[in-house]
Length: 154
Image 1 (cartoon, one colour):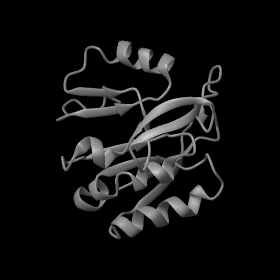
Image 2 (tube, one colour):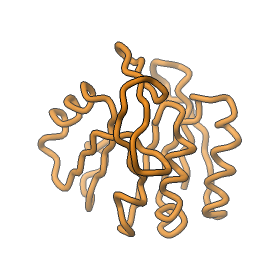
Image 3 (cartoon, one colour):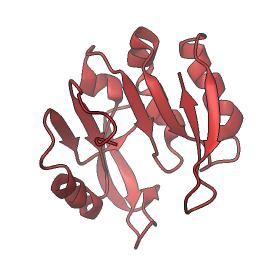
Image 4 (spheres, helix red, strand yellow):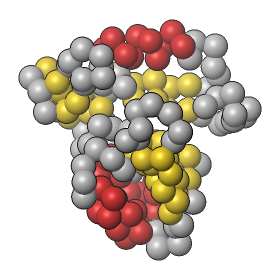
């Protein structure tokens, strides 16, 4: 992503899995204005149960208590220009936690829509309630896994 976007004011990245977070730190060490959080993104600040599996098997709803933050609590009124969500089925809660940021600044968004069947219609409805001027484009990336479908929201 950073190879396409040459300049940015700040990047805020959230990763709840400790092992993946260490990879994130290593892979982004050379980037400027980067703020990393070893936490999940939600509609509240606190702790959430997190399942840590092997490989691609991490998700909320397990037995390891993990810190969670909301976008609004982290940004505290700062502008966001792009938000990218792939929260393994927790996209609704992540959007709810960024409702002030989304309604105030209308950032572009990349939003995973394949974790729950109802996400295809509930997520656009939720975003449009925050800003009715958004346009939605659904795209299936030409890569593995084939089920990854994302909304590109402008």
